[in-house]
Length: 213
Image (cartoon, rainbow, N blue to C red):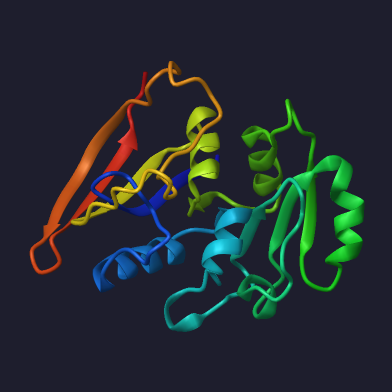
């Protein structure tokens, strides 16, 4: 069984960037969740805009921990940190592009192909391949489009959100969830497991689990 944990820091009005968000306490939470998981998965936009390495504490990149990026186009800059150090990351792309991208990134990444449905990569297909690679605990690190796809597929088991005491105001900034699905889609029921206030930074640390329907 594979469990997916969504983790994010956001403003009071739901923005997750592009400015850096979260204190050292939030960073420690992220590093702990990475250390307790088998893999991190991010969208291609997060690679392009934030250039994460997805390392553990101290910059460690163990060969036993998988780093995956989802990209329909496969248009990823090989100079990004994800490709420059540590074990090869996994690129999850549309099945028809697998062989082409496999050749393009042969020395930089492993490429997995998933059949697209209505122009989207279905989350169950991604999870099927990740399970085959031994992933049992997956950390979903954004961005909003990938968060939205996993939530719409009912594939998120836990949510860790750090609410940072600022308001972004600008509606064009990336949001915690962005989804092509109808806004009339059913709400995802969550149960609060913990709520902690960090008095020095004013951050609110929230941990939810999915409530059984």
